[in-house]
Amino acid sequence: MITLSAQFIIPALIVLTIGTIVFCAFYFSAKQIILRKLSKTRLKAIASLKTNEFVKIHGKALHVKEPLIAPLSKRKCIFYTMKIQKKVSSGKSSHWKTIVNEAQIQEFFVEQNGSYAIVKPSRNPKNYRSHLVIDKKTASGTFNDPTPEFEALLKTYNIDSSGVFGFNKQLRYEEGVLEIGEKVTIAGTAKWKTLSEPIPEYSYSKIVALQSTDKQKLIITDDPKASGYSRRNR
Image (cartoon, rainbow, N blue to C red):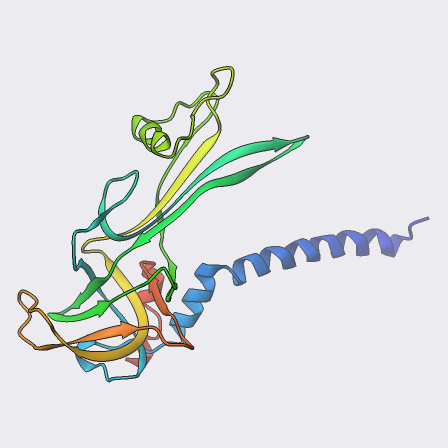
């Protein structure tokens, strides 16, 4: 027989366990790890950066070469992430299965009050950690046809939007984009370099690069929360 105290203790333990799982999933998410790291990193003006100091800067993202084009929204950008998921059923339960998970990034400038920094992220080997705000979503389902743009995108990945009996599959899409001209926060180790080619409207012969090191990767985010951290350290 379950005692009265056990009747309260068992539900409390269940609630505590669920709460702990939810907290850990939030606290140790890529987004929160990045924001916590940036909160402890000094925010400085680009013109005042010194070689070998690990800092963060905030400014406007500008392309160095032909911009990337985001898959669904077709926005010009220097960085995008996208994900396509399909809802699958197993017995009485169902879950979202990721069938496409893609990210593309290129080198870019950060402009701040007429000063420039250059950032050269690499995917192989990966020298950065990132968090982009998801600002484009779409979905399709049984009574929800995919938009023409979503349908066209699915075809480029050889994904059928309908099943055996012609019903729409349950699919969803999300996209994060660092657009040309969008504000971005970057953390890295500063290195001053001599320009091989002049930058229009930039009269100096040297430019600072934010780089990764063996111990610290670049951090890249367009999350507005990141730009407000550590203002007391400027």
